[in-house]
Image (cartoon, rainbow, N blue to C red):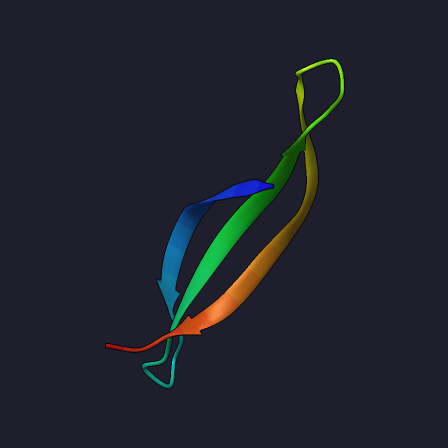
Length: 43
């Protein structure tokens, strides 16, 4: 399983959210997207 951060957004309340795309490598060695995720970001 792998993934990449596609964006970091800042909401009206000032909170930052990371948006991600998640994928797996199939048996034929090709990548297949399995979903998207978002999570809060804090420093």
